[in-house]
Length: 287
Image 1 (cartoon, rainbow, N blue to C red):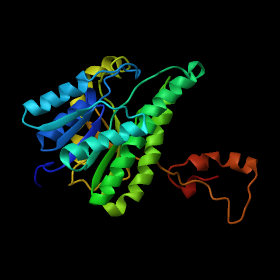
Image 2 (cartoon, rainbow, N blue to C red; image 1 turned 30 degrees about the vertical axis):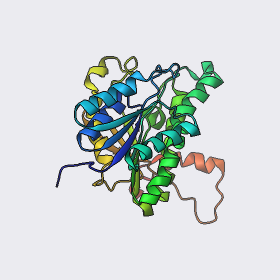
Image 3 (cartoon, one colour; image 1 turned 180 degrees about the vertical axis):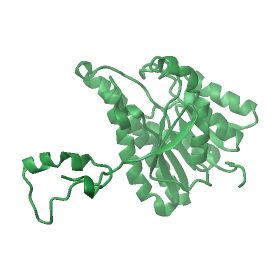
Image 4 (cartoon, rainbow, N blue to C red; image 1 turned 90 degrees about the horizontal axis):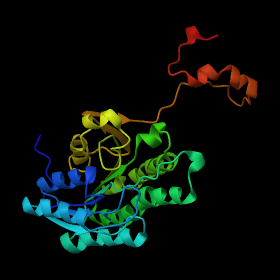
């Protein structure tokens, strides 16, 4: 097959000033995409702000012969989301790709979590992806083409100590993607969820000795494929980290059928709990 190229395509990448977002921006630009590099330039907890991070990404792209513009709007407001999509249209005439990558951390155990810690994380991760994707989705629908990636996390899919706010926000993105995959199907809009493990500014203090083996650039090939025209995958969750690439999915066991119209007692459900959890039906092993 031919090389994956993005000539004539326009990509908006949030959190493109460093870490994973920057690797995505540089790779897509090197393959012909025009880039809107969004980054608020704040700290890992979402406070503060600076234009320097987005500007540096744009500088590296343009020095390499690519085309890019910086955007410093916050994903956490509807106005910010609309502004960055409009930046793509104003500068390059269209928007084909959205990679929702911006994120912050406010890690605390559940009992110690304050309402503002929940609100800040949900505002950036879940609401932020919504506010950016909604105006972009409308443009993609008009164009009859689009590729969208949402960034989830094993903290939500599997659980991670001290990240109830983060995990909940990330699982919300899975639901958002599931529905948009259906709504975008007839418009050739493909939506996928990424669950990356990589050594970035946000995760460097969490990974311990694993950090050196989790190069962010190992995540980029999968994302590059998912946002390409060649990719027909949609409505899926993808795990990536340390050179391993895999699809994740929600499963259903064989279960126990109580019988048509039967209303079992709680005790009957209890007595069949092993059947509820059984992953493969083996009649000869039943009691």
